[in-house]
Length: 312
Image (cartoon, rainbow, N blue to C red):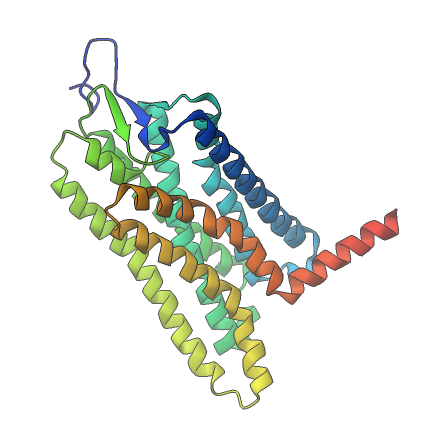
């Protein structure tokens, strides 16, 4: 063993084969076109959200600060997996180096975990906005918003580093099949020759901390939000207050729902399908959900379009 892996000779190291995409050339072409369209939709939608928030002063509020961070995160998140997937489909080269695989797994974990914490921070923001509206601007100051975002990145980085180091020290031989379209930790554990019992238990605990606890905090926030919304006597007032949270609720259930499905499936076909949904669904729908259900975003779009027409 050398540097955490076993080698078949003195000059080679394990390489990974993206086995889940071992399809015909025609099928790979269809996948390539589909993934390219999805990637372009995700990029254009999230870049639009980021641009609107940066250009429109009325959107310089805590809620849109978190939304801007979410859009940046979604772009980074899909960029760790989809470009490589398109490369495999275009070239037919399924092989991935050991270093590239570990790097991809680290970035995937980093961005996926950060999204969990960021969605929790957004729930805190909505809780303060609904339950303490008169003190909202004081409580959710710029330093507080930064303090809610920075730990999300820091804790996710620490967790991703620990998991990646543990997987790095597993034993792999020669050409290793990855039963997914990217270097997923779950697929790597299956392909390893090491005893992964302890690591599997550790990852289960990690999933509880990173996934379940934030989800429970979000649910607790919305229990308090719903409790306060029901106190509002006007039905119009109740609807307006709750509608300000509806976009976030939609994204939360899509993200955590697909994550739970991903960790509960044992079928290869289902695993690949749910992994694709987990990677692409929220980043693709996030701009659409916030654009269609948010008056401020709609007004910002209209304002910029009118300004462009005036300039012409």
